[in-house]
Structure formats: structure tokens, C-alpha cells
Length: 139
Image (cartoon, rainbow, N blue to C red; front, side, top):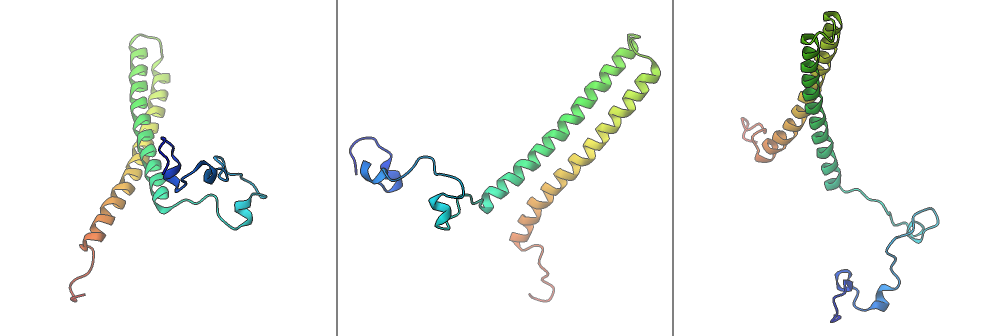
């Protein structure tokens, strides 16, 4: 093992000559050695997929909460403009109905996404604990 503070030992490479054949940036494309040897360069594991799914669920929930909060602020702004006589009642009613519709739709979509996430978490917990299996027949 080298005495200097190199990172060669992390890859199982002990000298600089052993590392000379490795590229920091592997070539991508149809003519690369890795592709010709049949080695896949891009592989997404199930853990990475699960992380991406939970990231998408979290982003969906955060987006829905943002839309609900933004709609509520906008409804307050419409009410203020009506009180200050900057907007007619008819225009305010139209905008309030539109913002309320967006808020309700965001609540429904957010509830659906959160419900799916809750079902996935508790379903896997209940399934792994054995509470969901039928034990009336002794099986």
C-alpha cells in the first residue's frame, strides 16, 4: 500500500501504473469497449428506483401543498382588491371560483398521492409483519 495519501487503495489499485489503464470518464457510445464486450454501462437498481419513486411522491405532495397555499393567498388578494374598490364583484366572483376550483383539485390530487404513499408504507409493514395473512385455516 502506498505511503502517500492516494485513493488508489480504494479501488484495489496499489500503484500509479495499475491506475493508468482506467479512465475517469468512461467512453459512451456504440463503439466503446464496454459496449462491445457486452457490459452494460447504465444499470438502475431497485433501490435507486424506489428512491426515485419516493422522490416523485414527495415532490407531488409538496407541489399540491404549494398550489393550495398559493390559491389561498390569491383569494385573499382578490378579497383585498374588492374591499379597496379596485375590482368589481363580478370579476372577483369569477376569479374566486377559478382559484377555489384549483384549490379543490390540488387537494384531491395531493390526497390521492399521499394516500398512495401511506398505503404503500403501511401495506408493506403489515405484509411483512404477517397481519394480512389468513390464519383461520392454520396456514
